[in-house]
Image 1 (cartoon, rainbow, N blue to C red):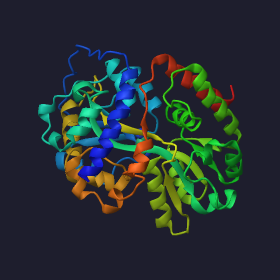
Image 2: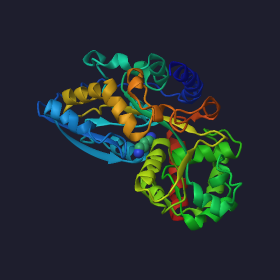
Image 3: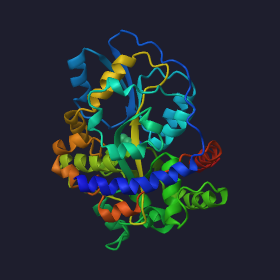
Length: 380
Ligand code: N2P
C-alpha cells in the first residue's frame, strides 16, 4: 500500500504544482478572531451527498451527546456561493481543494489549531505536503476523501447501442457526438459542473485541460453544444440511482458514486451490470477538504468532529461504505481489500499517469465557465 501511495503522491505533486503555478493570488488571511464557541451541544455539517457511512454521525452523537444537523450538497459551485455570500450557519463544510484554495484567499475559513487534534498524525505526511501547495501549511483544512471524474456505464446497454467495439475505455464514448447520439435512447447524464466537464473535453480534444485561454475554452464549449441534444440531464447525484436502476446507461460522474451505483445494482439482483472507467486519455482527480468557516458557532464541536473523522476506524468505515480513497494512512489496514484493489478507487500505475488535477480558476475564467454552462443548459 505504501508503495502505491508514494507513487500516487509523486503524480499528485506534479499536478498540484502545475495548478499552484497558475494560482498567483496570495494567502490573505484575515486577522479576524474566530467567533467564540457556543457551549451548546449541536454541530451543523454541510457535506457532499452519498459521502459518509450510515453510522458515522450516529456514533459521534452517541459518544459525545452532540446533536448533528447534517445537510448535503452536490456541487462546489453551490457551496461556494453560500460561503461567499456570508454566514452559512455551518460549522464544517467540504469544498474540493481547488475551490478551497480561492476560498482561503477570500478569507472565509478559520485557521486550524492543530494542537487540538489527537489524530492528526494518522494523515499521510507526503499527501499533506502536496495539499499544502493549495492550503499553505495545511493551515485551514483536513483532507476527507479523494477520487476521480470518469465514466460510469451500463455494460449491456452500451454494448447494445454501440456494439462489441464500443470505446468504453475512452472519452470518445461520451465526447464523440455520433456515439452519444446512439446512447441517447438509453439515457445520458453529465455532472452539472463546468469545472469538471470542460477540462476533460479539452484533454480529449488534445488541448491543455486547464487552459485559461478563451479561444481554447471555446473549443470545449463548441463540442459540448454538439453533444447537448443527446444529453438527457445535467445533475451531480441523481445518476447513482438512475444508473443502478437502468434508467440511464451512461454518465460522467465521480468514481465512488459510480461504484456505489454498481453495488446498488448488484444488491437489487436484476442483472444490471455497471462499470466505472478512468478514460485512457486521462481524467481529473480531486481532493475534498474539511474546513471550519469563520462565523461558525460551534467551533469546539467542529474540532471534536474533525478529530473523530481522523480516527483510523472511523475513516476506514467511511471508505468501505462510500468507495473513495482517503489520505489517512493509519486507516489503510482497516479498509476492505475490495476497495483497496478496485482500480476505480485506487487507480493503476497506467491510469495514474494520465490523471490531472484541476486548476484554481481566476474569477474571470470562473465567470466565463458559468456563463457558458448556463447557455449550454438553457440554450440562452
Ligand atoms: C459524493 C461526491 C463527491 C465528490 N457524492 C466530488 N468532489
